[in-house]
Image (cartoon, rainbow, N blue to C red; front, side):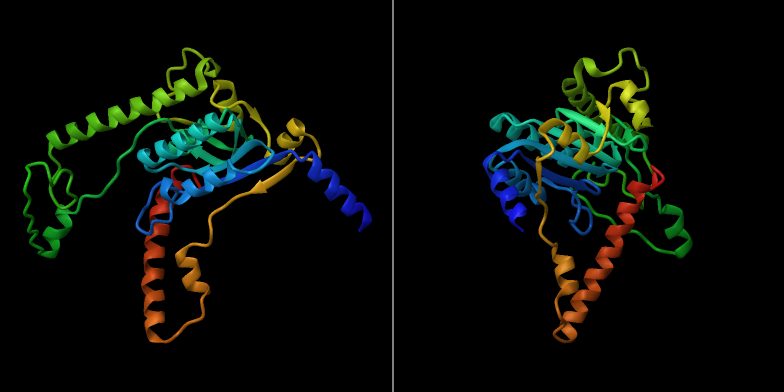
Amino acid sequence: MFKRIISILRFGRGARMVGVIRLDGVIGGGTFRSGLTDERLGPVIEKVFKIKKLKAVAIIINSPGGSPAQSSLLHQRIRRLSKEKNIPVIAFVEDVAASGGYWLAVSADEIFVNANSIVGSIGVIYSGFGFTKAIEKLGVERRLHTAGENKSLLDPFLPEEDEDIERLAVIQEKLHKNFISIVQSRRGQRLKPNTTNLYSGDFWLGESALELGLVDGIGELVGIMKERFGQDVRLRHIGLKKGWFRRRLSFPGSGGERMADMGGSMALGVISALESKAFWSRYGL
């Protein structure tokens, strides 16, 4: 007990603090608004940069991507605070930092991965379904009324039009250029030159990503932080509060209305899980 008190007092005088944020999941609101968004994570990121005696911020990333806009907003917030506070940011990739997940990773000054991490997928993807033949077989008549000739662009219940696909391609190309620009500005000369498929949407395991200059090393949070700041470094994890859905499940029921609300919430949760699974499945996860 006495040794513990002495350790606490000694630690308090010269504490080296590292704030830790976890960015885990699909980026964007989704059906259930449970993904990584600037609205949800902004206060968490702001809070971690306010830690006293802060030496660095570590972001743990495990994301297959998602919304380009939310990826950019989170990236910008992290970079702004890093500059304002003059605090370095170090990213640690777990299973995957792909597409928008890698966009988040390059908000850090350094990126460390596991040898088995999946990194990259610097590209833009759009996916959907076409239901025109299905509704014909079911004998369903679709009724659609719009004001604006392009309002029904890529409607899944209408046949695809060449001009709609061309418009989508223009948008995707601009998004892709924005993504490439961010990667080049953040990674700079660390990227391996003359690599033709770096921005093709391909992805790599940790060691290959290191060879390409997409990341800076193989390592994990605790080991790297102790190596940088000493054995007494203190890691302070700042995270989101329990979400509304989880609170509803853990709160004792109060009759039929509460059970009905829970049923609807669970249905939305299943839809959200299916959406999330579609993102992860591309990487075999």
